[in-house]
Amino acid sequence: DIQITQSPSSLSASVGDRVTITCRASQSISSFLNWYQQKPGKAPKLLIYGASSLQSGVPSRFSGSVSGTDFTLTITSLQPEDFATYYCQQSYSNTRTFGQGTKVEI
Amino acid sequence: QVQLQESGPGLVKPSQTLSLTCVVSGGSISSGSYFWSWIRQPAGKGLEWLGRIYTSGNANYNPSLESRVTISLDTSKNQFSLKLSSVTAADTAVYYCARDSSSLPGWYFDYWGQGTLVTVSS
Image: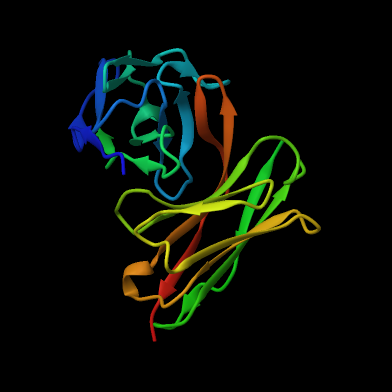
């Protein structure tokens, strides 16, 4: 199976901060990496697909990038509604796998 | 607007089989190139993909659970189902159904159910 290592597991930030979250794949997965946001008691919400494509309706302060097997989610100017847990997920393999999650706290 | 809704018992006894159904509305489950997946999340933990079924009825599963998982499709009712056998307390989780869609350059879960909590306990 393709392993995804996500870091950090949690971070503290303030409104207006720039936040970056990283996922590293255990092998090449091209651009087959997605990002989700999950708030307590809710289902995950798709933010970014194909490493850097913004899902319709998602604010442009969210962006994704890739360098080799390293993937980055960036939130520029963190907003109050962005405090949540973020997950990456690979879709290269028929066995889908998620990162461990990053909790963004105030 | 596609919507997914899980249903099933909230309490299952150890060693029994967990059975859940996901009803899809706002679109036909048999049209388009979609996979229909089950994903679970134990309380306070991360997401685990269990398996998926294609519109053709072909399914594939997480190797770690493959011997216990079965996913099936009922196009007449526009729904798909999950069966997980020989459950233990470790299977206690919120279970989500989700649509796995494709748009270059990849696949992604674009629609999710609200999730249903299943507790394994005697």
